[in-house]
Image 1 (spheres, helix red, strand yellow):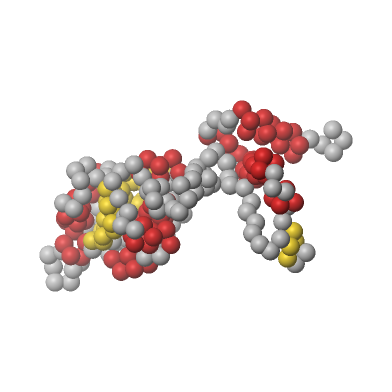
Image 2: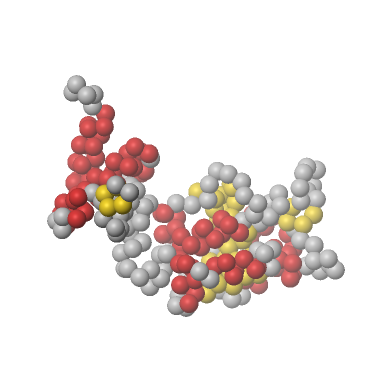
Length: 249
């Protein structure tokens, strides 16, 4: 996958040379470049922002530097590479959207700053706005990294296990199950006996029940988004009955 991040802080790329993204870069499964809009200014101070028309607080990123940065980025990508602006008004980033974006060989990510960017960029040069949540951060760089990390995990060969990304939370309509590792007992806390039994069927059933229970207790909306298998639904019905029944029932 080829990705260009348009940002006022291109130095942020050095932070991405670790973990999943770093592994993808090392294995040459991801090509990541940065473009600074300041490189496309025509003034001595490399100014990329100005006061908003109509008044108001803060500054707005100017049209010309962003337009030229996007145009330059497109010359290094295949035709039709989507331009994604990280924005509070964007489509919420979900695993479904991550899967959709990971099908692209090329992505251009636009990180805004200040009060935002000139609307004419959004209207004429952006293909999609994406939000990572209903809160405000200082710029689009961190949301861009979140999106890039999630998408990179879906690139074949990045994760060591071929099924790793399929077993993550949100890859299914429920959370992942609890995980334990050695030692078997510490501070008087023990690993659930079923995980030590060697009975893989019992282990899988326990893990599914734990995952469904956790999801039902914390995010029931996830269970309503997608259809469960018959066995998953039967187990969920049993869990709901157990959790909602009164002691006398």
